[in-house]
Image (cartoon, rainbow, N blue to C red; front, side, top):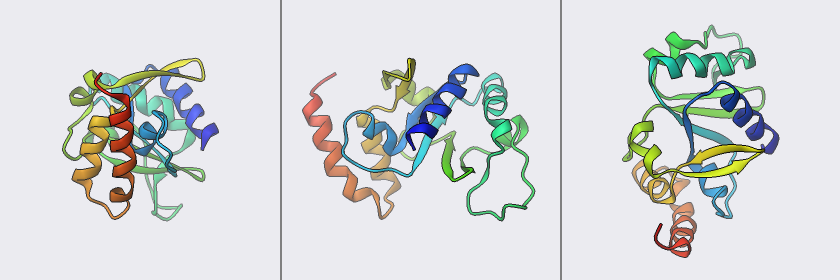
Length: 161
């Protein structure tokens, strides 16, 4: 996952894509001792950013996770515009593109509270722990309750921002 994560960060930065790393990876990168299998990003839904995102990822041939490999799917600006949230596979890796998230909204709603860290020499925005916890609570998936105590303890250790 580390190589994939760095590859995605480099591609997105090179393409000047506006995004925030969300999901459990944002917690892991802030010190949570949890494991995650995929990379989730929340992307800005402006026409210019949709074009940059499509261009940055197109040659990797992302396709919907769980669909047959030969199912027709075109990953482009139009697809991003008419959809919102995508669970994609790129080779054996998983990339979720989120235009909106439960309880916390989209890019413009979270970017102001995001933290910035350096990864592979690049500045990367991460979802704040406060927003991550709210999102996990709202999603209420079976895997989320186990992560909440770890995230809440980490938030408490960080103290006020």
